[in-house]
Length: 356
Image (cartoon, rainbow, N blue to C red; front, side, top):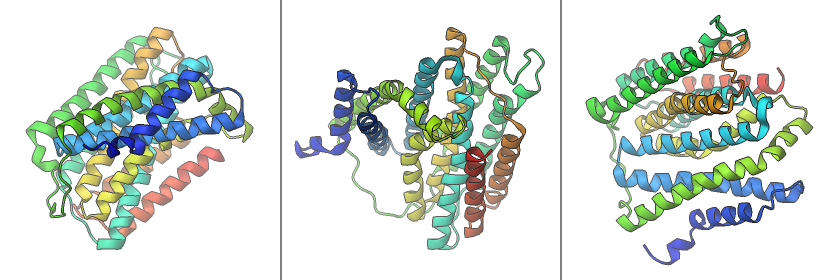
């Protein structure tokens, strides 16, 4: 690793973000808030870049797992920071963010990959079994955490009691842990790209991998602290535009998932749809299977009201998205129509968030 590479943007911007936060310049000034937002996004991009370097070192499918967990840590950090700063007014933030992440992944990332791959290759092939395993895990966690709270009777609103919250958090962790075990040990071959005949760059050196691991941790910490510092400005901006509070969750999910979405689309352009699928569905399962338990712990400790149940409109859109994805992945090959339908679903979701 040369000295020149240490001046790469992924090393410089996290340091600048740390300085910005340390100096405490995140005040009511619009220009400083914009600067803080830019540094926050650059730190997110830096975190995913360093996660990609580490992932390249360890190989598939561990690489996509590292990316998914890094994304989830960012998501949890942002949610918890905003919940702690916002208090009881943010009682739906975790639900809105997790739901937004699932919708953006299923419709946005998968839809874009299907569209890009369909345009360039007409059809792309993948292991149907891997998609089925991921979707079974995802549907189980989604129903237990986002739909079931509407129909329990221990609490009046769409929430779990503390006992129920603990039980379903453990259930989510068990499902996600089992999925990880299947993906990495028992049936690892299901998740490996079959047509991986593209030229690859040399794996990074041990020193470069260690540096990326260190800066990955730095980036994750910077994102969490900056998000907490900028949370009043984010909520004020949404309020000034007259947008509903649920848009905050969409913004968080979009910022966190943007780099991973770019990585999945790049894989689809290389005719490696299996990698795109691993990234998308693995991230969706990690997003809900890890975020809900982590935020539940914070909610119990700080005694936050923690609403999980979706409204009817959101449940209809979620069911539509899951059903469309299941039909799109049930043949082991793709085409452009699936991508177009999923992207239309995405725009319908975003439109109904802004115009409820």
